[in-house]
Structures are given as structure tokens and as C-alpha cells.
Length: 260
Ligand code: FES
Image 1 (cartoon, rainbow, N blue to C red):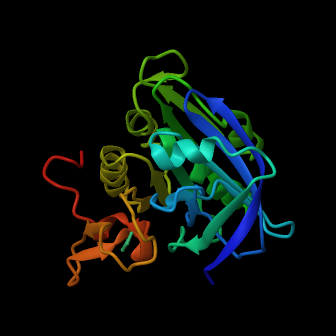
Image 2: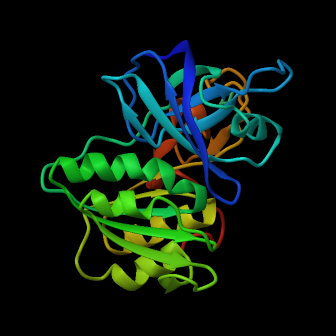
């Protein structure tokens, strides 16, 4: 159940240009892969909290990991927090990825800052005996590759500039790979065009597909309606923060030409 807690920044380290890896020591909250926390940068109450997905959690010891981009006022303040500083959090939020199925063959596709939340998903799927192949795309500076490899999953990397791995994005790379072997489930996190491509490829190979959608958020708890996502159901718009951020790709409206 979600609750507020004051955590202590345990580490907050730059791991790539503009990208920080923060561990917070706080109360035990039962989070799962795909969920997120609202983190209060502190100091300036005019700033809204920032929604940041969990990259990992050690719930026994109350340690939570977030990898985020310092791209605006709030996240720049987060990046400036030194170890030992207090940070207020509301967590866990959102629905998270569904439970794995026995013998699942999973493809996990991430692009850019959609990659960090997939590390925890990959770990948990690999630990539960699933056969996992991971496809990670970056502009030019890959992150977390060693940790993905340590999960035992097969890891493929692409870069937009071709400086490492496949030259192109993660969806292009996945499409090249997707005929054989077959996958039961595709999980994706990253920019919407990548999610749409992953959904389209999953449909072609008849795999289930769950996507973690990134939307602007203000409250994070379903109260302000600023994170609406268009869906095919009777309820045309659903809230990314409270009904997602993970959706069955079949439920979403992708827009003309987005899926291919
Ligand atoms: Fe307020 Fe989703 S962020 S309803």
C-alpha cells in the first residue's frame, strides 16, 4: 500500500551525461517491477514531485534504487542531493508489470531512460526461471549493461550512432531478431514510438505485449487527470499514474502509422 516516507539518500552518482543513479534508504514498502515513486526534490515547495520508476529494490533492507535523467528544475535538484540528505517519497505507485507465467519466453525491450525500470523486471523474470532476451537501445551512451548481463538474460544492444552494437533503435534490432526463437510475451518501456513498434511486432509474432507508458504527471495518484492515456475501452481515457503505467498494448490507441 502506498505511503509517504522520509528516506535518506544513500548514493547519488552520475553514470552517464545527465543520468544519475540514486539509492534511497527508507521504510519497507512492497514495490514491484514497473511501479514508481513520487520523489520530492525538497527545498522548494513550489516544485512538484517527480515520478521516477524503481530500477530495483532491496525491501528487506529498505533500499530503493532510481536511475533518472536530470532534465528540469526538479530532477536537477534531485541530482544535487548528497548522500545523507533526506528525501521525501510517496510509494509504491502504479500497477507494475504482471506476474510471470511458468516457462515464459520473454522479450524485454527498452529505449533510453526506459531502460532502468527493465533491469528489475529482467532480474525478477530471470530469477523465476523465464527465458529472457533483452533488447536495449541508446542514443550513444549505454547504461547498466553489466548488470543486465549479470541477470543471465541474453542482452543485445543498439545505438543510434552505431558506436556500439546494432546501428539503429531497439525496435529495429528486435524486429531483426523476432522471427526465431518465438516469444510468449513482450515487455517494453521507453518513448511512445518505440512502444508502438514493440506492440506491432508482438502482434505479428502473436505474443502478448505489456508496455510501460511515460506521461507527464503532477499528483501521481489519480487526482488531477493530467496523465490521460487514450484507450480502446469504454472508458476512453485512463490515468497513466493510477491505471498504469503498465498497459496491455492491445488496450491502447497508438495513432495512425505508429504501429509497424
Ligand atoms: Fe494526476 Fe495522473 S498525475 S491523475
